[in-house]
Amino acid sequence: IRIRLWGRQAIYGYLWYHSPRYLGTGIQSVDAREFTGDFGWIGRSKGGREWRVGLGEDFAPNDLAGDLVLKASWTF
Image (tube, rainbow, N blue to C red; front, side):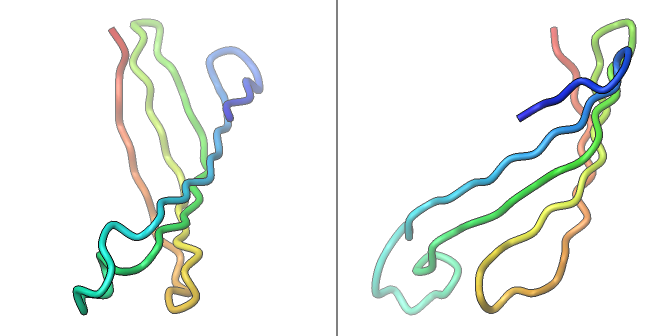
């Protein structure tokens, strides 16, 4: 979801869920489900480039730390 605040400024947020890729491999990173969220700020330049700064979080029961997510992107 993207909500424009003023001018070329916006905030964004999303939730992502992915079922386990494999089962029974013994490797936690591929046997576990993925449920993450991300939210932050978007600034768009006159040339169409978007600059994003956000915070992401993995909602898995064993991961309680917040992750800093820095994104830079542009559209054509």
